[in-house]
Length: 435
Image 1 (cartoon, rainbow, N blue to C red):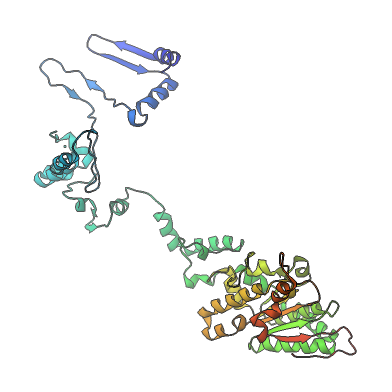
Image 2 (cartoon, helix red, strand yellow):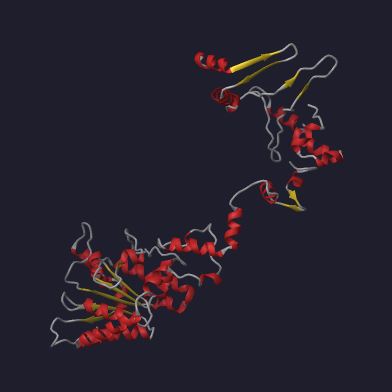
């Protein structure tokens, strides 16, 4: 201790002395804090007790009693020994030694008066000859509360209300599903769910109807009356070959027969016009259309459009075994299951492995709802790709011409299930071709 600090503490201590007793106490808070710090500091802390001097003919006693009560798990008591002590002899000596904790249990077996005292009260009436539960005689009895023997001491303490943790809040959440609903709504606003956290309880099925999947709710929020008028106007403006493509895809959605299509045509063939017509026609019927594009600019031209990586969580680093990062029971999984049509514009830009990853994901998700659909491409969803192979193809770093061509969608095994619908610029000579 520095001399200046020590002198300051001396000045803060008032000494009171009489013929019978002597006492010292601190009258400054900062000095008390300093002393308290060193009295309770780490392993070198000192024990402090207030003693009453014995008068003539009386036995000396301490008040209040200051005693360290030890306790430990079975076979885990502390043993103090020197470096040069024989460990075998120490173990033999300690095995038969009755510690204060074990002596308390033995005393409870012999003395009925001790069974009404907790461990901390025991030294007031019993003396341990170098003595929080009442009447414990074994470790098992310590784990017993209200006639129930718990598997751990911690559980026994919880049952008696001696410990506090999150169980009270978890119990309240289980009883009040309305609280879970509010939490789920907050998570939904960030495209997350309680199902994403395994340690959190989920809603009872009877209460799930009280709220909707935010992603599904957004896709169903379109005005059906307005879309019906838009659909009628769009169909009136379609030329013959556009109507053939439109009807082919629309019938596949209405009959729920599934299908994989590629609408091929160079710029100016009004592919976006067909996408808008299909979206309004299907959404006006209360169904879900997922409009996506390979690039952000192209997605802005689609009603409710998103990029494919954003909508389907396609991995950035893609491999031939990749799947979309969509978990069972998640918001995106439910959206994908409920969707009726997927329109993917500017498809030739992306690597074929992106389409194969999307193909695996619905198949996996449909295992829960309809296992028969897992054997069909894209889980029997109607998927329509669009684009022009004469434009930008997938970018392969340091790849050869062969590497680029083999990475396109028409080099994938999925292409054998694809029906190609071609559009041509000249409206007067337009025709519909299936390949």
